[in-house]
Length: 84
Image (cartoon, rainbow, N blue to C red):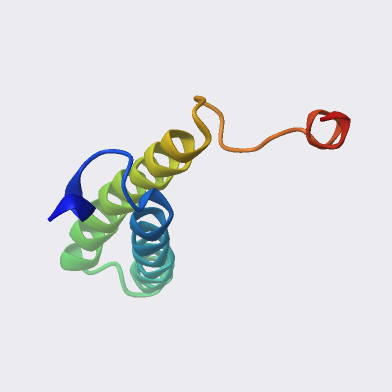
């Protein structure tokens, strides 16, 4: 189970969370649109749940991406990447 250790397969773990991020985004968007059209209380709850899930998954993707690069930033500026 070395896969579960920090620093092991971070790209794979980030990709799994990235897939969940896409799914959470789609379900959040659907529920926001549905709530604006129908104003049903359970849809408002769904918006809150999927909004929290979206934030959690975004944090997980950031965490795995920054662990993989060895820094706290996810993106590397183009100038820094080409200067090396």
